[in-house]
Length: 114
Image (cartoon, rainbow, N blue to C red; front, side, top):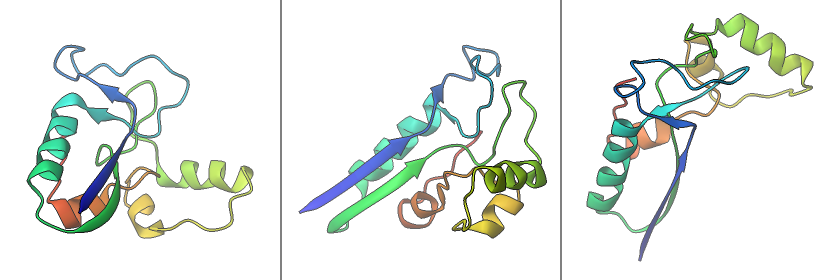
């Protein structure tokens, strides 16, 4: 039996919204509806047994004003929250969101456009 769970992060429609982000104070991770559709198609077509749980989001981390958040600012906020360890720290330092989609990229071939 195969079970693939997709955890979607703040879904929005870049085309309909003219690439404008939904209103919110801080938007760490988002995902375009087209990328969501791609993830579901890949999960349905996957030929693997067992369980898989994947975060589905953008390649990037954005603020509500549409600007990519510098990694140093994110790490400062993480430290202020008292979090001591971050998995995939190199991913975060290169501008990736805190909810990493790398497992879906590696195992399913997920390739987010936004």
